[in-house]
Amino acid sequence: MITVTLDRPWLIAHLPRAMRMLSWAPHAPGYVTADQVVWREVKNADLPLDFDVESWFAAEMARYPGAVGMMTSRDIGTWGMEVAQVGDLTAACLCTLGLSNGESVGARLPWHPADYGTINLLIATDAALTETAMLEAMSIAVQARTAGVMAAGVHLATGLATGTGTDCVVLACDPGETRYAGLHTAVGEVIGAAVRHAVTKAAADWVVWRDAELARRAATP
Image (cartoon, rainbow, N blue to C red; front, side):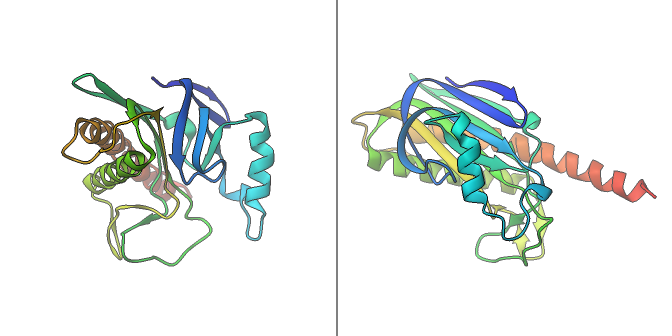
């Protein structure tokens, strides 16, 4: 359902056809129709204070006309994908995840320019949904993302990490007549399973990376 091309600093997700998408992505947000979603890897030095990120990113995205675009400071080579099936429905979740700017919902930590990270998800399903059902499916995806992050047990001064300050989720499907996508439905189950498995694995991998990175820094003179 999703095929992936890694072409640093880009990660390109190809869908089998143009699909209806819903997101709050920094490029081409809202309801759009597209057949590609791309990630742009950035470093802290790429995003100095007062930099016009939106204009810069729009210019960068010109090489992928019509695509939805997201940014991440996580090494895009760490991407992972999980696929779930419930009955005759399938969902796939492509995920990159870093928790350097983790937050616990309902509280905020002081912002620091070195604390970039994000969770970027693309969920594609063969369920054909109304626009209203897509909103409900998005709520399931975000709920599953949060459960996956919490399973990693990342403790902050404000509580257990539930996400980051810059998370982005893109949901892709065909337009159709399915009106409901909650937890009691097969649509909700299949989307929730794909996202939860993808995020749980990615968050656990990030914790391993973080611990190794902290050990490396402590050993560096």
